[in-house]
Image 1 (cartoon, rainbow, N blue to C red):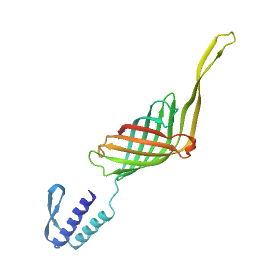
Image 2 (cartoon, helix red, strand yellow; image 1 turned 180 degrees about the vertical axis):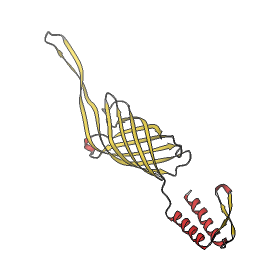
Image 3 (cartoon, rainbow, N blue to C red; image 1 turned 120 degrees about the vertical axis):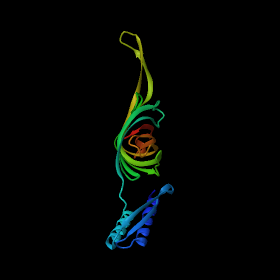
Image 4 (spheres, one colour; image 1 turned 180 degrees about the horizontal axis):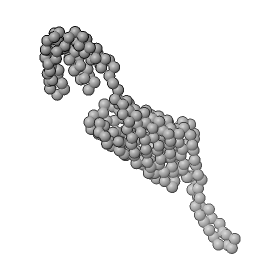
Length: 227
């Protein structure tokens, strides 16, 4: 799209500069996308021509950045990549992305958990890059860091014995493993309806502790809407 706009602008500049005569009407034709043509009558003097040339040159060399802010909410499903982290844990992510053209900085809060495991991060700050988004959507990748923690239960075992009057008893117990610290995050995903006010999105994220000995990585998928 940027190349098309530059071509249109250069065409307008060259046509105007070549055909315009001071004090006389000049017909300017500009080729538009999809085979369309726009034609208009202009009356320019030398100062107006110079101003037009300067304006078009400035627009080509220093195009305005498209700045937007996009909030989102996602439901999550994931697990700690550890043998004692049982099952798939549901979760929630709430965040906001500040976009400049197709690049953004993302701020979010994330949580997944069930009775056997949990993961949380806040704040998570992530850089995101969108690749040639179209009207239907576009892929993106992201990388960043977060402050977060994990929890899981391990070493499940049965305890048996007899009480003071000789009756037998038994119960299950486990060890509780918790960590807290800085984590590295990476994501890949797809955002639907990129240029619409309401957008759908899906992504896959991996969060790993900066010190690998602290704990196992976390992997989760997210499905949500951006607005």
